[in-house]
Image (cartoon, rainbow, N blue to C red; front, side):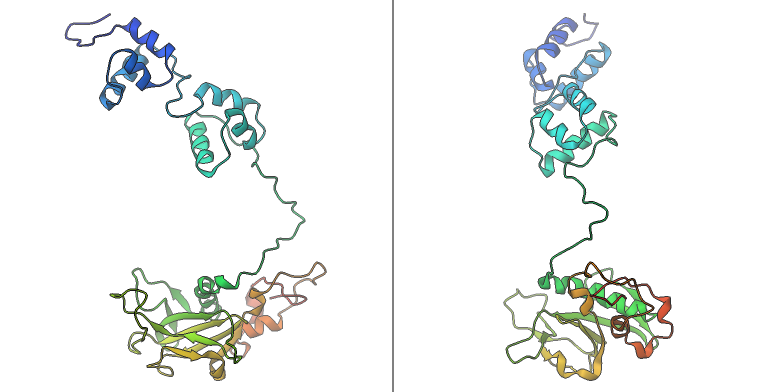
Length: 302
């Protein structure tokens, strides 16, 4: 049926047949002799299909499964692995997101579905391998924790700066550059690069010292857990140092964070461990019981 001014070359009955015999809007458009790649054409067909209350649940588009199939599979599935198997798709990251999103758009209840992988028993302790190469990424967090536990407000710069942290201390706001060193050299000393490459050059450019007017403190984390806070004026003009030769600027020890977790028979947390005293620099710690820093290295607890 057409109305006055309707320029369609197909009837409602033609649309009904096209929808039943195809599995996508583009296919239906081609069956009607229309250009299926036109977004306007597809919108017009959808509008008329809604007016006629046509069932398009069997449409898959570029998917391998239809809305009807997804509803059927999810009705009997107990986990996401069942859903993927029922739809005949591999359990990949992309397909997982697409299927979950499509199920939500259809208003399907996903709360009863378990993850595909069985969860680890609650009583089993978390065991992770040590990753010394991640020290550089972890160093800023250690610096933030150390300053925060000493009552200093810590802020991150909103835009890239030559410093990593802004720390409010009793000496005012200090600009802190964080550095790290994974392992000692052959001579037993810990080399730490404290230089930078000019931003306008590539990574092959020679490093240059930080301007002491741009940096106030260097916070250094070594692979053995030693923590140093060295004023920039002490190492001004240098691009590398041996951190362990600056013993007077050693402020703590985070070695408990760099080792595997506690043994199975580890004691319960004690009042305050030697590791907590080392990490915090106990001389300046007023009330150690006010801190909760739960790390269990062997029989000690922080």
